[in-house]
Amino acid sequence: MVRLQFIGLCVLLLACGVAQAQVQEPRSDDDVTRARTHFEAGRALYQLGNYNEALREFAAGYQLAPRPQFLLNLGQCYRKLDDLANARSMYQRYLHDAPQSDPERPQAEQILAEIERQIADRQAAQAPPPPVTPPPGAAPAATTLTQTAPPPKKSWIKRNWWVIPVGAVVVGVGVGLGVYYGTRAPDPCIGANLTCWDLSK
Image (tube, rainbow, N blue to C red; front, side, top):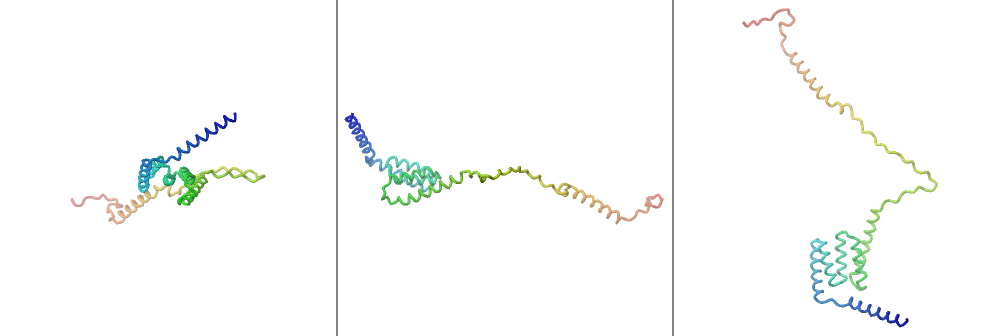
């Protein structure tokens, strides 16, 4: 029984060693060259503001040569695309995979802290306000029904606007008739009980 356990442990250790050797197996020069091509293409696309395409190029390069610097580039693309969750994941993976002596580590830690702060701010802004609970022993607040006020009543002038133009026309006609009849010579036949004849004949 002990011997079987010992054999199982040896097989397990051997399998782990093979897996580790496969993970640490150096990439071929061809893979590294192709990864560098993807990196250069991604950097050019990033400079042009085409962050989706740059993301694809950096991801393809990382598949060929999983260098931690690719993770920084991926994280930065996600930041530009306002995908803070994936950006945080890329920076966390970089800090996990990169050696402690990596010169870009302090800046990556600072950016990760900023991303965490932005995510917390967004979650706080989206969270509903907490319900207001009355202190113990306080009477429940009375619910007041809000009534909408009726619209203000229009003034008499606004309701009867037509009176002004009609009145102006009537006054104008009256003034015109008064001027006409006031400046006209009196008719000699009016008020004289006489029949006016056409004297020109």
